Image 1 (cartoon, one colour):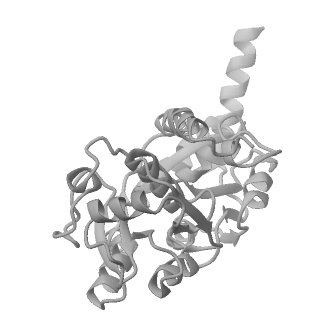
Image 2 (tube, rainbow, N blue to C red):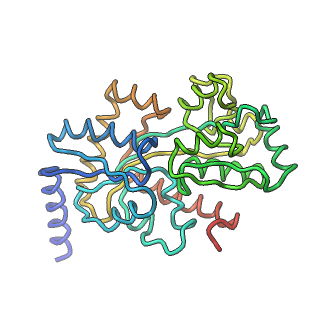
Image 3 (cartoon, rainbow, N blue to C red):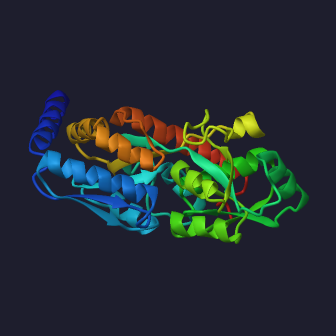
Length: 313
């Protein structure tokens, strides 16, 4: 009986994939318009809509309500979510969360990795990362950093930096990347981790000072900007990703189809070029591989934040 049940489930999953999609697919973005996540989602929606000959719409639902809605959606592949790896810390930094970042979602694929650059106001006394760390150490709790939201990659990158550098910085969250960037340009905050293209443009215009990048190697667009490991903290390690998830229970064959179709989209030259404008590096993988990353990152980042007392009060 169990064997027959397994066959039936597999057959049902395969049938669902063969007819998928036969109606509109919604990609929920739990960040505001203008964010990297939003831009990536719209590139995908355009290409997948053409490939599938179905409407693929992007729905911006910033914050926990958007993620919660996806977790509670029908697990049929018609509601997807494109989010950042800030998703993995949602349970740590939010009280009374209504979903489990691991158990309530099924990984589809990573879309891209996105290096971020530490930028400072143009008149900051610090010219290098070491100087910024020294400045913060001399004035604990007096300097702050902006982020695109409490669960964004810009927050997580800065928080891991803050802990590694053993400095006291105050977090100032915004509702999206544009406001978080404007805050550092105006000098309202002393640091922000921005995407490479934005950091490059603003640095060249003298509107900010780019001092370090959080990737494992320097970026060709900013060859003179050292990595955080080079500049000051050899043990710094943070790999940001953006990826597509579905509600837990979505048929495996549907997950595989969506993952493979997205992988094809990410090979298209115009898509690669577009992602480059976001400072993104295409990095597709399988649902199983993405599930493993989500589980591992949730454990690692959760420990980092709990050790710092974040989200425990």
